[in-house]
Image (cartoon, rainbow, N blue to C red; front, side, top):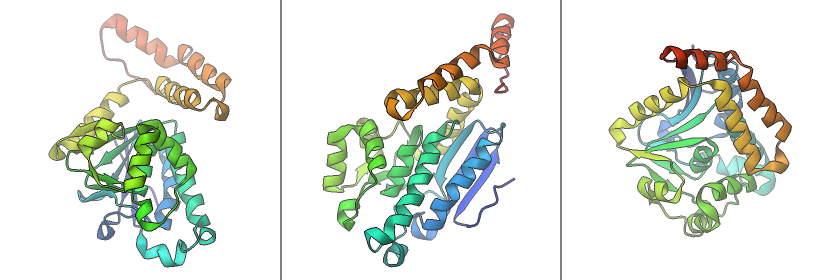
Length: 265
């Protein structure tokens, strides 16, 4: 059943072990508006409460764009000054925080344009898989916009400080191949194979123990930012794996030479 949302410009529905999050603004190449930012935390609340969902995948409607940036039709009313943009910054920060903090793996499935806020959203995911025809850019300097500090920090983790300066100073467009070389994208596949490749990748995740995946995700986040994390919580998650029914199932399956069936308990 689809997740009930207050806007038709976001769609979300479970599909087996996948939870699809779809930016649905094709008339504007899936440019993201305030109501779309607002919908993201509610979607993640629903998917995180569903034990059947093992991976959350973000994508754009159609094949022309993942997200082509902010919806400029709202600029004069909503983003005309730093005071007016405060609401936008808070909404986008919360949406990206929820994506990054989700205990479940997140995958950005990138087709077509991935510009500005689209890069920010993709960078918030754990894994980015792009079609070979995808096009990227960060165009803040062409609009005179600032950029969220937390989002800059995440981009520095992926492409390094000089890479961030290059992208922002030039505001140039670049290909999926270059995005892969710089570390912004993890996998580049033929466009016609993109959804099948994403599904196959997520199937690999779904076959594995959710408690182990959650522990690894939270511990990697702590190791990147120790001051914002909790080492003891990470250690408890690791210990919980050893005491779990899934660990017992994994041992049995190994002895019996069969595929394990993990339940996340």
